Length: 266
Image (cartoon, rainbow, N blue to C red; front, side):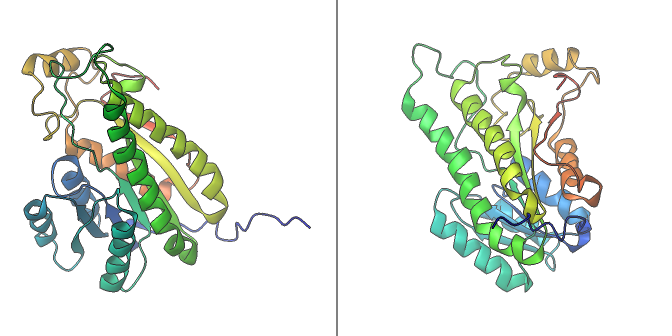
């Protein structure tokens, strides 16, 4: 006999200052801005990093009572599981919210990118693994705690390049496009558990480690074609993540919010 979905907690929405937020790749760049945004909103934050120990510890030191830096390669499922165990032990509660931000080694350098003739499957696979396997490991590790609480928020970081491939970064863009597909299918699968899954897609941000190789003229061109006449900063992008985690978005799932100053109309 079939049963109705168990949506008994469908209206449950935790305020930001009651959430435990795990952000991948948060030791530098956009990830550090995301961590600071959630800390500024009063959340407890797990700052994941792979190699950027000093940066992660520096962010954690800004709110030592509410932040924890934990090393883990998101492509290593066992390491990810151990990270969630450490977070729960430290905060005496499970993670409520995850932000999949970790980026495989990549530089937005149009001159160095592989073109259609030189693109290899190895380059594509590197991005698929880092972006999609990493997000999969993190989401699956979070599900037990989210279901236990009857609340969960998953926020994936995407890109506007698959809507507007102004520079054809084939490998990076394909990985993020696949992540959007997972965002929408996971939203459908996890909705009955009161877990929302959304994506925030930025354009080129000024400036992160990944965009540091981008020439000034490219930034200027983007700014000139954007309604706001400027390039979005990591801090501005991070502000949008608070929206998907906050109670105001309790009925929003499976969505892709483009945060690029209006360059791409979604």
